Image 1: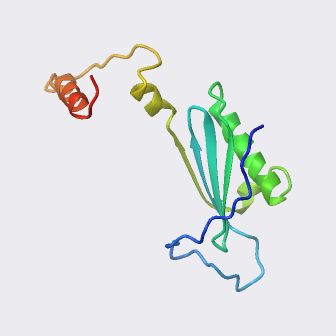
Image 2 (image 1 turned 90 degrees about the vertical axis):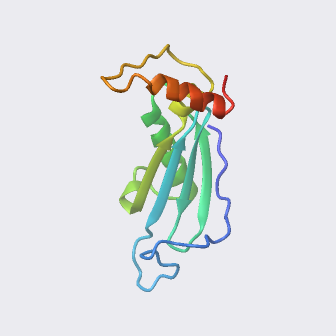
Length: 138
């Protein structure tokens, strides 16, 4: 498994109002986790309650994106020295996004796709084509 991990990133300029950069009471660390499933790699960002960010990268599993997310979480647990399957119990916020579908459209890959519209929306295709030329697409 490919990975880049443990990189400390400078303290973010703004943190959510409920996010403390100092521990006042001994309690479990709360992590903010963001995962982006891309066409080649699944990127993970972990932010702890001290504002320390960790960046991790695992190969994307296009046949089963959920497996890729689980691989990313397992890598994060190893990087943090946490027991297996324990990270999600300590997560305050979890965000998940994917660029797989967007990449397929931009690269014009994937299955042939059609559009069906209802009455009054016949010009949807014309609007899209106009925007496509405006955005530099042919």
